[in-house]
Length: 338
Image 1: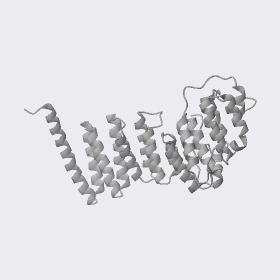
Image 2: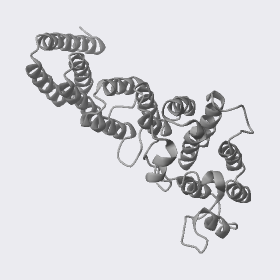
Image 3: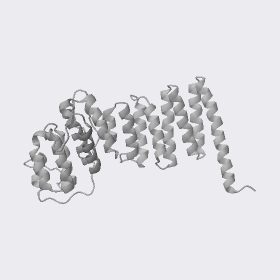
Image 4: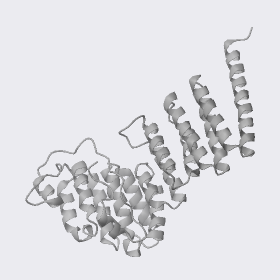
């Protein structure tokens, strides 16, 4: 008599053999150029496997099919099967694992960067990776997406995903290249300033420190510091030290002393309002006779303690070839108020 374990192994082997035979036939159809027929057959098999709760087999078949269609430049069919990969993950309630994330990013990397399907795919993948709406996605998935977009020299999108990963070093190295490729020499400090402030708005002190130290060490146009030639870099250095100390008076004086540098981008004080709330006990902004950051700080010298939960900074406009300052003054690059 065959044991139950042996029976399961035999059944699995038969299923695997069946999948391989089916894939062989489908591959032959694609190789002959029968793309539509092959695409419809993939879809039919997907729903058949799903109805039998063969989620892993369905996912593997769709992933391989998508790769096959990509290799024949059949973008629409490949994108459709890629979405079915996500559907199999959603319905099977599969655990988030590195190999699955790598497969998803591989499919993403092969999609036409300008296609709406790519946008829909990444949005759905991020939603799946967090288990539902209202969250920003698995940090590992964000990191893999950031690295892929960096290779494509899509710096602004890469930067967004780095912000929601835990890879401060990778973000810094990308920003060095971004600054050298897209920015003016006079703006080398502004590229890292935006990243540091946004990491702090996300209450990610570690990545804020790493991105600052790595960027200032690796950028060829920045002399060794601290102190730095650029006042804005000195401000960021002091700010990171102040965040560790948590003293509101230090934060207040620091922001006052560096106002000329902070006025280079109108968003800096918006970010600092939020940072004041998260790390120094500054109450949320309200109308006051002073207005702006200074008003908040003066009204809260005796304010309450640090908030326990930080809201997330949103994605926004990124710097481009026209220079960073002009772009940032046109539209809010990343909301400081979640």
